[in-house]
Image 1 (cartoon, one colour):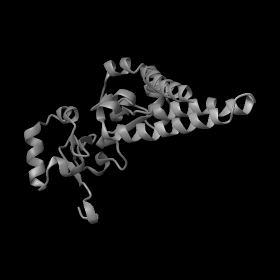
Image 2 (cartoon, one colour):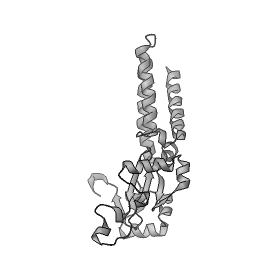
Image 3 (cartoon, one colour):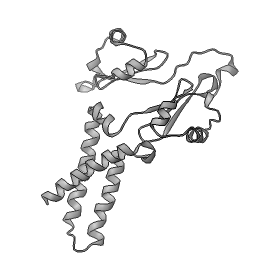
Image 4 (tube, helix red, strand yellow):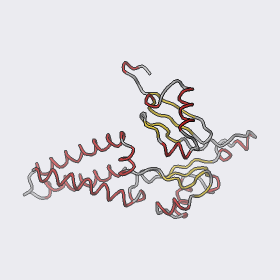
Length: 228
């Protein structure tokens, strides 16, 4: 039984890393850990059913182990940005502020024709209308249109407006995301100033986002007793 336990853990980790290396396009709508769990469970659960010489316990124990690993992995990755990036990856910006990111398209192995197909599926006929196109961790593509092309369009209303762009996660559960801070063209001094203006500190912040127009949104951690 101990051998089965360790073999299940080893296979789970290996499959998780393999799916990560295969890229987002192969994952579909599932996270890597969810897909690995589905694949393993489908195989494990069938063994005691189709093979009568295999004890039922040999199917139940690995199933319980895999489910526990999925729950633990999900929890750990919410607390560790490094592990989440290692096993899940991070969003890939395919169109950045209206410009197609050819380097990123090549890195995630997406052709421009495939990108065009995804845009058309979302009702966008011209890539020049897109301000941001982001491939999420599960392989889906999110599209943010330029302000002038949003419905109702500001050009039709004759109202000028600067691009707000995409909100980026600056602080998550008290941890500062230095990479996103750099992409926004901000530094630690700016961050400390904004936190001071909102009378809080980084370790007291659950979520802080900032968009390209420097508009911020802060959600503080919930304290004991339900007070913020």
